[in-house]
Length: 147
Image 1 (tube, rainbow, N blue to C red):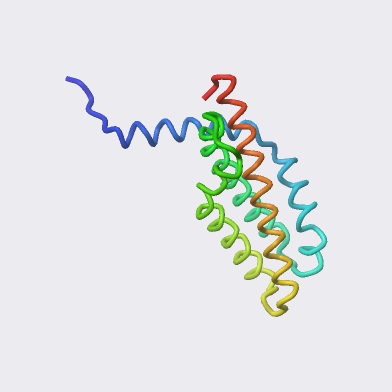
Image 2: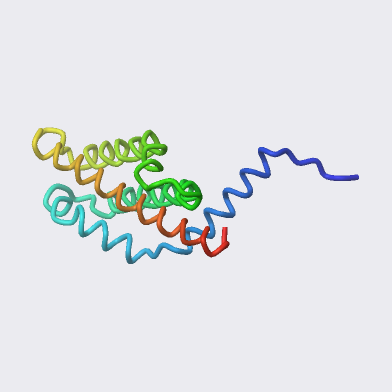
């Protein structure tokens, strides 16, 4: 007898396989350096839970990287980065809002409006940087036929 699989299961397996391959492109040192570069002075002055916030930032960076890698297929087929970024706008906005809410919760930064606005822009830049990184690496893998 044959084993019956659905297309949905096959799609999920293929996506997980691609994500595992893409995760080999990220190093933890790069993640930590990027967190310290973007949030270092802010986190050290505002909270005692630096390691917890760093882990949350790493999770969001990995999700943004995988999101960019997932959308890199469109760039490979000729779309510009700006139009592909528009496609993933809502997913990227979701990651930015989650990171902002996470950091605000752990640092109680919501008390100051100006600091809060600056933090939001920093989160936006951070997620955008990792999205671009994933997009570039994913497009490179498509060009090399490694997908």
